[in-house]
Structure formats: structure tokens, C-alpha cells
Image (cartoon, rainbow, N blue to C red; front, side, top):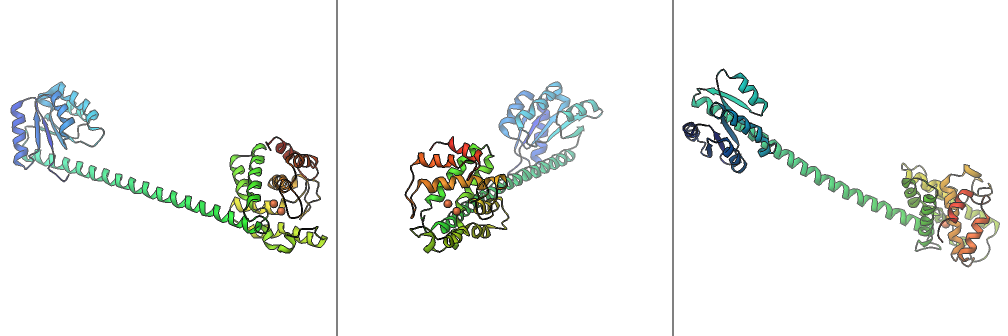
Length: 343
Ligand SMILES: [Fe+2]
Ligand SMILES: [Fe+2]
């Protein structure tokens, strides 16, 4: 309490109010208000914001208890000490008052020294309570600020991660797709396919983020082969095929689900359901689902867009080709989901 503490004195006898007020003033406590009516005192407690209430139960009787009962509605759970004055043998009244929130008792007749000593102790306790509350409030503000700072740092880190993924995907595609349009379209189709297959939202998001890296291994293949306009020789095609393993090596041994998924996608997106794909010739469901999804999304995008060695196919022809390859090149379940997507 930086300023003088405020003391509210309630005693049914106006002379006693006057006497108690005098005692407090003599001890230096000049911010006091006194009332002989408990009901009026309650209003005063609401507006005066006392730091201590001195309540004489010997004169206030039932009204004094009503005052105690109503007091929590005024103090809003802040610690407000109430020093109750009772008659010496009145244990029942003390117990009842204690249950209603009285903080300390002093018996009548009392001397001024005892009264001021009790009052000072209670005021110190209130000051400590207030200091503690203020400290807690500051700590809460500090925590909120730190949490906000952490959230900003996390979202910046997430943005940086997405940037790096996008640039890495672009590095793999820079030969023939320097805008990253192919990887973005494949990622979107893969996301829609994964949703259609009923996989979890978390997994859908994982596929969407990892899909752009499917051809990252092309970074290790020369432009002379990748951009060759005519038909590739069998040797050249064998070199192209190595992009799956190059990509998987780049993305291997990661600690996150994201890198693990991206690595699988890079390695398996050219496997075929009938076992005639590359690089490992995996068959059926031994091909991870992310590989089976990417296979459809990647081929559909390759068919419907122009490449150095071919023109773009009309959407309907490309969809018919995907359907023809159901159970051969592609997983029939994935094809079924694909055919329900809007073109
Ligand atoms: Fe590929
Ligand atoms: Fe691709």
C-alpha cells in the first residue's frame, strides 16, 4: 500500500465509533470512516475500498453477521481483513463470525495498543497479499508475451521450412519447370486424392507438403538428357530412372515424418502396381500408399501438359488412359478415387 491504508469502523454505538476512530487517528491511521449502521457500512465498503474493516459484534448483533455474510459480494474475493470485536466468553459468536470470513478477533475491553497492533499486522498481511497478486499478474503478462513471441518464432520457422521445401523442389525441376507449376499441380492432385481415399487430415497435409519433392532427384541428371527433344536411348532412360534413388538419398535419414514421407515418395513414384516399374520393381500393396497416389497424380499431370518430347493430351483422353491402367500401372483403388475428382 503506497498510500495511507483505509480503515472502515463499524460499531452499533456511535460513541464507540468515535472512540475507535480517535484511537486509529492517534496511531497515524487518518484515512478512516465510521458507521453505526451495518447496512450503510456495506455501501461504504463498496465505495470507500477499505484495507481493513473493524467490526464490533457486541453492538451490531444480527446485523453484524449479515454484514459479514454480504461482504464477499463487495470485495470480489480480494483479501480484505476483518478484525472482529467480541465479548470475552462469546465463543459461539466467534466461531460463527470466523465461518463467515472474520480474520482476527479482539475482546472487549481492549486497550489501544492491542487494537493497533492487531490492525497493523492485518494491514501488513493485506499488503503482502496485494504484492503477491501484482507479482502474479506481472508474471502472467510476461508469460503471455513470451508465448506470443514463441508463436511468432514458430510461424516464422514454419514459413522458412515451406520456403526451403519449395526451393528444393524447384531445384529438381529447374530444367523443364522453373516456375514449379508441375510440382504444385501434382501436390494439389495428390492432396485431393488422399482426401478421397479417406486418409486423415494430418496425412493429407503431409502428402501435400511432401509431393513437390517427388522429382528432386532430377537435380542429379544432366540437361542434355532431361531436355532432349527426341526419343531417349535405353542407356539415357536408365540414367533418367536414377532420379528416384538420387532423390531418396537426398531426403533420407531425416528425423521428421515429413522427410520420411518425401523420401518414400521420391523413391516410389515410378513403381507400377503390376511390378514392372522402377527402381525396385515393387508390386501391389508393397508399394507404399504415398507412392501409389503420387504415381497417378504425376502421370496425369505429365499427360495433360506439354513436354519437350510430346504435346499436351486433352483431359478426357488422359483420364481414359489412367482408367485403362487401373490394376496395371496404378492401384485400382487410387484410380477409382481419381475418377471421382472433378477434372
Ligand atoms: Fe519422377
Ligand atoms: Fe513429376
